[in-house]
Image (tube, rainbow, N blue to C red; front, side, top):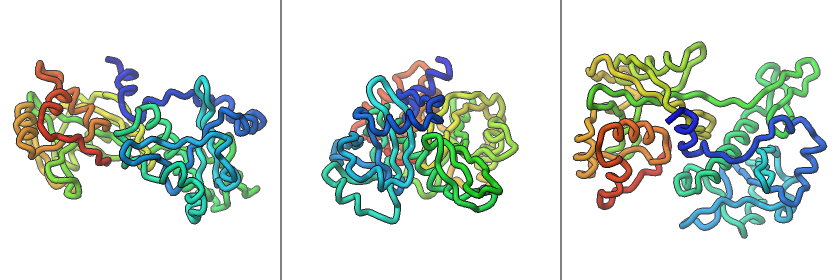
Length: 330
Ligand SMILES: [Zn+2]
């Protein structure tokens, strides 16, 4: 499988809309789209989004006719894109006000996407993730990082410009790259856990890419800092948007040069080598829990596990009485 198809399988990545990047600067066209009866609006408040029915959550996307005064209330309106039938916008509502929440209560309640992520249809989850990431960026860039002057949103919310005439700096949406790596050695793979995670939960090794560093350098450095393991043969796997709040997870595999674990920076509470047999035994015993199936961490573990001629990992997990995929996000 190529990288494009691998990434498309990652949750939050399956966004079906055309971002229409060449249309963003056309203010007349954008204004027409805002009034278009097929326009659809995703309200965002304090990085939370509107959901109906907690037992079977459905994201609430408002039609133009349902908007009332919300368009005037929004601090930022972001053009997200269009599919065959609908134009999508995100609305960032004022964090210091909740008056509109009463008006919207007939549709649903505001919740963090983290809470329902795995329960949503993938294309909807991807659309909400996109809206969450962009509205978060706007909220953190209301002032110019160069001169401190106020900035304003332009290009349908895909650029901010400093209003200080002596400055005029442009600011573009940012994504923070983070690497996550499945390290393996022969028949075993390396997983770690942080002390704040639920008991028995282990995941692949992750960390942020630093400025002036290649992705591969970040893989080698993070794994050594967290586990003391030196690696080689760093291979790209796939990527996953991770808007909590503004990352993209870049998945890799790597081969360990040695197997002597030392928790160098103490970011991890524990790190261990697991064989596929260890996985089977400990999962069945209930003393090991894997990352949620909608995380790239699970995809990395799954692809490694399934490379052997065994029952596929998801099928195996489904066969364990009472095993529940964790919904915790990291
Ligand atoms: Zn400025």
